[in-house]
Image 1 (tube, rainbow over the protein chains, first blue to last red):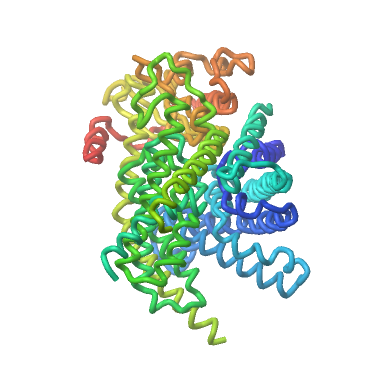
Image 2 (cartoon, chains in turn red, yellow, orange):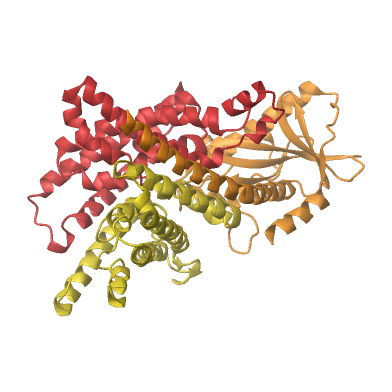
Length: 214
Length: 206
Length: 212
């Protein structure tokens, strides 16, 4: 249980996806001009990230990783093949499998939302196509499986928290940028450069969280 | 269609349409791996290779791609080359492969690559697509190397591992850390705008 | 319906071509990657247990470890090697630990980490005119019970700004050593050795071959 809490706080504050891991920067810079859109984008990301964490972990565990639980091996054994469990190592296909799954997942979510909840689709729908190429989603899938070696529950918690961390950074950024509209920013610094400087200062503030003791 | 045209396709990516500094694409790797010049170069070369191959393939297969499913097919092509790069790097440059970590597989979602496939390669022939990819790749790599060199110089007192600042230099660790990445890139974008502003009126063309 | 089937088939065809190409490339690179990992692992094992000549893989009570012998006749045990896994700041850090027969640490070697550049990665920082990282050197000759970083009241000097990383290494090493100790004591008298042994000389040869 403590472990779960550490993962959650770690992904939201200490290893914030945007400010410390540098994932999901395109939407962070692109969709942070208004707080309203930032909230919409954030919610869509949390939703897709959680789903994607669950689905990609399942694919990793049952289709790509070698071992007793690999479904291809189970099928091969049932068909009478004497191949060893280690032979079914498809981990090298993870990137291609994950991105295709995420792309179809986003399409599927879009379809379901359109049918089930038109109101929600109104507010989140326009952000969904952007999410496929949001590297935070593929990033969380890769981190869960390759780098951090999480189990299913840990992956799920990491996915949700990473999405919350992303949303937190996005909303804070949009709040600052809304006020910045009225600030006398030098012409050369307007837009992208000042956004990066702000992100740098925010990142500096978030660096303070790494002193949190567990 | 002249050589001039081809050169324009190539050169625009370096500054006028620099993917990172002007178009704001491929930001994640540009910030994440540039804690040293070597890492920046490694990422630049890897992304350029993927961009080049996917641009060529996309421009060749474009008659065989139904418009409705072109994006999934482009992603598939890109993901294939990314996996190739990932495997080859793990086999022949394991140290670099470990340093770049998940940002190698994340080249798949580098908006720069899908963006060029969609905006350029799916509309032009293989020759011009090659020129476009090489120019964009060079612009991307140059930006990453410069950013990495700057951060490494201030943050560790060295460039490409060679100590330049002398032993008395107290490195500003902040530049290696995440905030340093944001601050450096912000200043670099402003600098590139300043250069563009200085050069464009004299040249007369955009 | 036709609208879905036709594009689906086309996409599948592309996927098949891509999968085939990757399969071929993987079959070429996989042995090289495996060889490299093995060479790196062997180099780490030899570094933490330098007196040993022959290494034998073993399991006791579910714990996997390697026994190092000082000669080919297996007359005397030089020590044991276990791999420790510790949750660091942004990655799972893998450390190879060499232990003497009375369970003091002979040496450790960090084989995988993806920590914050400039902070956590300092566990691999080598001081001028030294061979091994200073953080790692502190573990040499320490008893299992004394593997704590200064922030937790121990003697190991942790890395400035990277307590989580330092602590992860220290705790995982202590845990792995402790587990091996308990399981070996449980399993004694010494269990039957498994036949799969690897000789240092053979491995060195393949390792050299792999670098070319």
